[in-house]
Structure formats: C-alpha cells, structure tokens
Length: 232
Ligand SMILES: CC(C)c1onc(-c2c(Cl)cccc2Cl)c1COc1ccc2cc(-c3cccc(C(=O)O)c3)sc2c1
Image (cartoon, rainbow, N blue to C red; front, side, top):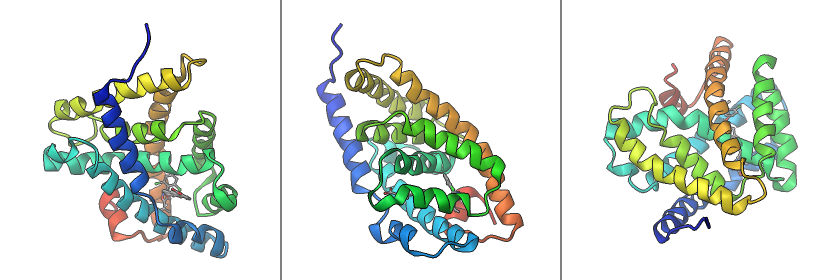
C-alpha cells in the first residue's frame, strides 16, 4: 500500500530538521581544523574544543525536540548524558559522509588519528564513519536518527522509560516511512540505519576506554565534558 507522511508527521519532521539546522557548531570553531598546526597536543585540544561546542549544540537541539522539556528533569539529564557520545559519533560521522568544504574530511581524519587515541579504537571508529558514509543519509534522516538516539529509553538512571518511549516511537515510525520514500529501491535501508544505532552502542564502550587512556596521560577536558562524561 502507498506509504504517506501524515500532516502531524510532516509537522514533527519540520520541527526536528529546523532544530537540527538551527544548532550547528560555529564556523570559527570548525575552521580551526584547517588552521592550527599538527601535534598530538594541538589535535587533542582542538578536538576537545569542538566536542565541547558540540555538546552545547546538542543540548539546544534536544530542548527543541517536541515533548523533551515535559519529561522528568532528572530524566532529561540522564538522556543527555547517556546519548552525548553516540550523538557526537553521529555528528562527526556526517562530516565524513558529506564532502565537507575545503577538505575538512581529510584534516579531521588526520587530527583524530593523531590525538592520542590508541590504534585499537581508531579502527572501529573509522569503520563506523565508513559505514555511515556508505548510507548517504539525507538531512532529515540525520536529524531524526540523532533525535531517536537521544530519546533512547533504556539509558542508565532513566526513571520513566515509558514517557521516553512515547516520544521516541513516533520518530521511529516517521523515519521508517521516510526511508521507504527516500530509498524505494532499497527496502532494507531502514534496517541498515537502525543497525548503525546498534553499532553506536558498542562505540560507547570504546569511547570509555579512550577517555581512560587520555586521562592516564594526564589530558585535561573542559568542565562541560567532565560533567557530561562523569570524569575528574
Ligand atoms: C574531547 C575530545 C578529544 C573527544 O573525545 N572523544 C571524541 C570523539 C571522537 Cl574523537 C570521535 C567521535 C565521538 C567523540 Cl565524542 C572527541 C572529539 O569529539 C568530537 C565531537 C564532535 C565533532 C564534530 C566535528 C565536526 C568537524 C567539522 C565540521 C563539523 C560540522 O558539524 O560542520 C563537525 S569534529 C568532532 C569531534
């Protein structure tokens, strides 16, 4: 039967995409990727600055997700803390999938490879970037997938999981319809997108190890990152 987006779904879509477009890392931050010199220290500092800016952007985007601010306040914090790393993997992955202007892609890869991350995490990290790049997600899909990741009910310390499910469910339904409409020639595209969310969960584990190894080498994070990642 013909798949059609309802009026409500279209309104939800517009709100999510609007929020996604509105909240971006400022150009003066990302353009530093091209300017600062290359050293492990400099790369780490630059990535830390971008990640901090990304968390601020993520909080603003999340506040614009319909219904989020009506959730229990403790749960709002639990959802943000539980999804921040995954949302940032998704965000940084988009840089690799769309050909960034002025060769950001190569420069970002170089800086991540030389930021003190051990080889055992570099491989899964870039495998993820490659698998996201191969999906050629459109903006709507990127925005919805980020919102769905944030609204994952079974994050640690979430008390009212049903309330989160009630927000996530319509987004998953909408994404499913979008995938059918955007990729008619690829019926399993939606399943591939959800597969990325599963892969993201494993990356959380790697990221926790990355943080530990950076801290062992006395790398400092910003107060915002310390708060969202429960470090220091
Ligand atoms: C603290 C820091 C050292 C760190 O610790 N773990 C990670 C991490 C790493 Cl390595 C990989 C994945 C996830 C995390 Cl969380 C990081 C760096 O995290 C980030 C987070 C967001 C972005 C967005 C970017 C980006 C570039 C150009 C353009 C744009 C754009 O949106 O236009 C975005 S780069 C970038 C780097």
